[in-house]
Image (tube, rainbow over all chains, first blue to last red; front, side, top):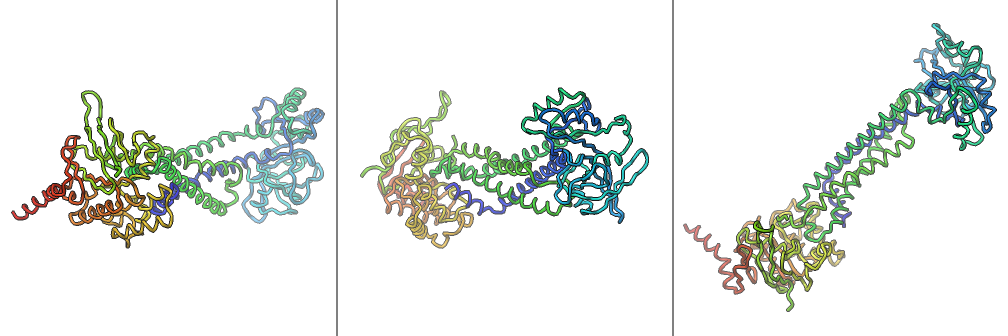
Length: 385
Length: 249
C-alpha cells in the first residue's frame, strides 16, 4: 500500500521528481569529485611512503619529522640493522629532478629517489628487472613517468638537476617499471642506486655528513610487522639521535598533508550538510503542500505507518536514483580527465562518499515524517483541534 | 432492525472554565441500515463537529458513539483508524480524491486499505463507477474531472468497501443545482439499495427531498427532527418557492 502510493505519485509527477533527482545527481558528482581529489592529492603526496616495503621509517631526531631536513648517516643504519626483530634496512634519499626530452616535448618534473638495490626502499618492478649494482647509470621509473613522459623500458632518459648554480645533465637507462609511486606531489618518480643518486643529486648539502654517506630516511623492514610498536621503541632506545615512526605517521607529517586532507574533508562535510538541507527542504515543502490530502487519507483509514512509509519510500528512491545518475555521470566524466589531473576514483573515500550520499534520503526525510505524523485526520472536514 | 449508528448524549466542549464553548450539546439519535439522514443547520450550529464525532475523527467530551455494535471511544487511536477504513465511508467537501491516482484507483484505494483488492473487488468498482456515469473515465485523474464527477467518484469510494455507515460532508458545495440534484439522488439511491446508514451534512435544504429524516441543529443542540415525508418536502421546497418568487419579481 505505501509503496503503491509512493510509486504512483512519482510516476504522476515525473518531471518534478526527476528534477530533484538531477539535483542529487549534481551533488553526488561534486562530492565524488571532492573525494577523488582528496584521494588523488593525498595519494600523490604519500604514495611512495605508503607502499614502502618496510614497516618503519627512521628520521633524524628533532626535525619535526621533516624528511627533507632529516640527515641520517650510514653508521646509524648499521646500528639499526643489528637490533633484534629488524629484518633489513635501506637508505633512502629524496631530491627533485626533471626529465628533459630531446624531441622538444615538455619536460617532466620527478622525484629523484635514491634507494639501495635489493633493500627496503626499492620498489618492486612490474616489468623489467630490479636495480642491479650500487653504482650504475640505470633507473626504475614509476607508472606515472611512463604515462606522462611516454617513457619505455630500455629508453635512455636525461635527468636535469641543479648542482650549486649549474645545471647538470645525467643519462639513465630505464631497466624497470614499477606501479605508481608518487612522492610529495611530484608528477612522477624515478629510482636510482643510492651511490649513483648521491652523485647526481643537488649537491648544496654535500659536506654535512662529513664524508659519511647520508640519507634522508632509513627504511626498516621487520621480521614480524605486527610487532612494530615494540621494535620502534627498542630502536629509539638503542640508537641515538633518530626517531622511528610507522609509514602513516611519516606521511601525515608531510608539509601541508593533513591540512590539505582536512580542508577537503571540510568541503565534503559541508556539501553533505547542504544536500541534506536541500533534499529535506524539498520534501518537506512537498509534504506541507499535501497536508489536506494526507488528512483525507488518514480520515478514510490510512495509518500513520502508511503515509510515513509512502513518503520515505519516495525520498529514498529519488535520492538513490540521483546518486546512481551522479555516480554514472562521474564515471563517464572521469574517463575524459587527463592523467595529470590528481583525481583518483578508487579507494575507500569514494565508497564512503556514495554510502553517505545514500543516507541523505532517510536523514533529510525525517522532517517530513514529523510533519506527516502531526497531520490530523480532522483536517479532512475543514476542522482542526 | 439493529441500528447501524447510535449517538447517545454527545457533548463536545472546547476550552475550560469561563472560556469554554459547547459546540455540541447532548445530541442523541440512531440511524438504521438503509436510512439516509440529513444534518442541517446554520454555520456554527455544530453539525460538522457532530459529523466528525460520529466518524470517530474527534472524541466527544461526553457521550457514546456506537457503529455496528462497536463503541468508538473504547478503541485505541490505531484501532479507530482501522475501523474508519473498514466500517465507514467518507465523502468530503474538498480534497476528496488522491490527485495522483486515477478514478478507478481512487475507488479501489478503500479495498486496498482493507487488503480486499481482488478481481471481484475491481469488478465491483468498475460497475459502481459505471452506475455513477463514470464508466468512460476510469483512467482519468481527478484533475481532469468536473466537480460533479469528482463528487461521484468520492461517493463510489465511500460505498465500495461495504461500510456500515456512510458520511458525506457538504457533497453539493461546489455544484450547480442540476448536478447537485443528480449527485445526491444517486447517493440516496445507493444508500437505500445497499442498506447503508447515511448521514449528509448540508446547508442546502433543497437536498433534503432525497433523505428519510432531517435532523436540524442550532447552537449545538438538536432543534428539530423531521420524519414525515410531507414536512421534509416542505422544508426542501422552501428555497424553491423563494427562488420562484424571486424570478416572478
